[in-house]
Length: 76
Image (cartoon, rainbow, N blue to C red; front, side, top):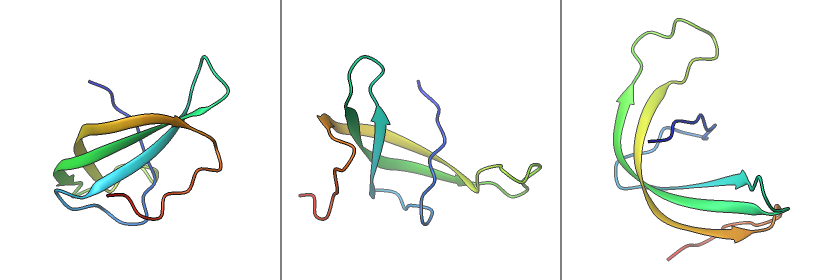
């Protein structure tokens, strides 16, 4: 299991898709991960100013290599 923090414009709903870009440690490219949201847990009290607003559980749906200027407009 991997844990990481991602800034999203809004908290996603179950069933929605999240696309995350991570820099490849071995290559000069970006690895793009597509996740499906399976659960959302809201944080009732944030002890730190930089604490996340919610914890999101996801399932990896697809991943591929791309470039840093990759833009996703529509994904089927």
